[in-house]
Image 1 (cartoon, helix red, strand yellow):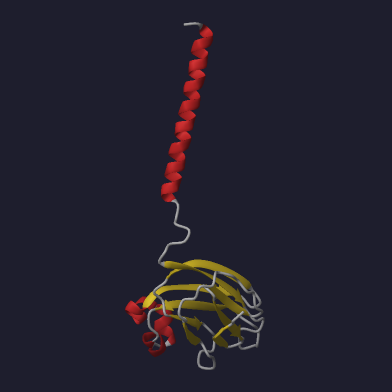
Image 2: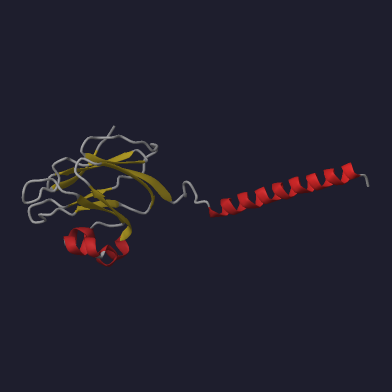
Length: 187
């Protein structure tokens, strides 16, 4: 063989090896990728906007609040449990009713956005706010999920609140001083 032909073979073998290696890497990465929208789950976007006056301390200064969100099959256990059981051991307190729970610390005046996939089996969304003065606060609220609609996902940013927009349903969770409330915000 001529010297030029051998060099061309080495070059083409090198290109082939690189192409095969590239495909192997792509296959490995595809195997690790998470499904974007599982059929049995819904993407929920949480938008939290807190009042600058939330959770006042003894000197009336606003303080951070930990907010707990519970996606539930039923509301009975959530309404019967006390604050400490719901926050310290939600799996034990809510047992089979609990599908998923998340928590986030909210600083006065802070805006936080959180996106997560939630099992479609939830019928209620419960919220607990860890206010400093539990006895003088409204620390829990719950809202029943309406029947599924044909609407799409979207987002609405509201002042001093938390918005979940899910298949046409918006849930607004407001945090003011020592009170947490859930209300529907229909566009």
